[in-house]
Length: 309
Image 1 (cartoon, one colour):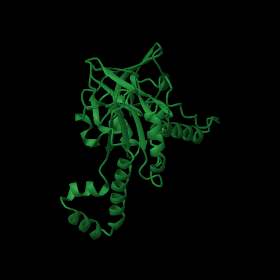
Image 2: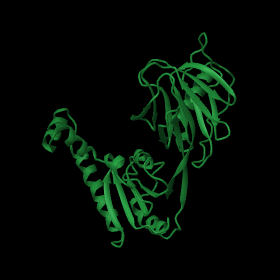
Image 3: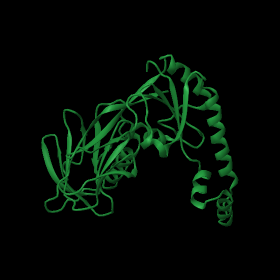
Image 4: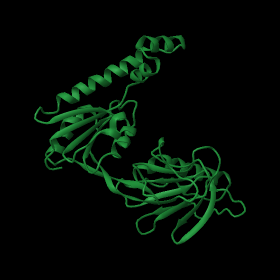
């Protein structure tokens, strides 16, 4: 963090701005929604509040620091520098989007609307921003490291994830693959594999835990365990779970859950002629093709997300 000389504010389009992109003009967007019986006023209020917050944050950044503001759509083309301090103004998804393009730069994650956004990964409010910002510059901030996952294919392609990776088919047909873990290997046919980081253990993986416990309870299996506790954000393990493994001829259902690490890695070989994918953090457009013969090694990433909260 030594030598921070630029603040990069990452923003997202408001609902109003997305509607204008869709309908070409604000008037057209308002006409469409009102004709559908929806009120346009809350959308305008949200837009105005978001841009007011941008203005308020900007005033708290000293003029001695360079300042850039970018929309998240520009993240793939933007060149971050090691001397940057990054501020995200949006929900958890914006933090996740931004993290994949960083390499150790601290991030102050601001929640623009705490009344509507839970903000697990963006707990900083507007009223707290000034204090967090000053402490971060002075290297006295409360820094939290968030472990990231990485899927690396045999051809060198890789994909990072802050919350989770999905490995399977992009359609609703069964995914077919061979999974290797803990010195064992198994051919499986399932709805795909979810790999979760510590941060992601409160998301998709938590839903899988809840479903598994509910099904086991309905079957009167005698399982009395409650929901597992979320993993720490800086954990050096990755949880994985196989979704709906099919117990057919030649299809195993033994290696369906575990904790992968550098010592106990997870490997998946695709047996899908087409439509095999690996995507991260619920963003289906951010994917690697994963078709027959491709091998994916799932590991802890060599970088972490550094949140200043």
